[in-house]
Length: 160
Image (cartoon, rainbow, N blue to C red; front, side, top):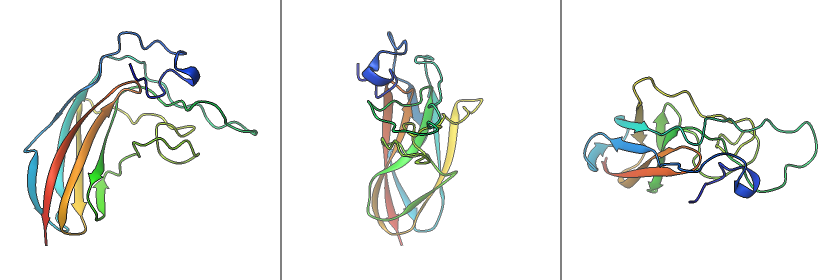
């Protein structure tokens, strides 16, 4: 099992035995035609088994270095990101960064002080995406529990 940092330094500090990847369903077609500048609403449903338990990242230390193996916040989280495509895509609400970046304030699960956003009561995430340039894009939906993830891709053909 790849725990993606949920086990803390050395990967064994938290109980992740028996973890099952989140369930994810994206509403709508897997290929969509949209126009530049016109927001498109994306809806996804995600749920998880609760393993590992929700845990924010520790705040940054008052002084000294932050060496060692990267850790990450745990608990169900969801985000859309541009997986393929050349132009700018704006998400509303803004999405956190899904890649490992431990710098303070980096807005990633690996950044000190970061914690998973509140879960929607109905398990449904609604996000608007607006494309700035024509082209073909792949947006990836990712549900992650801090240990395992589930992804689904949606291709957008963006016309002027």
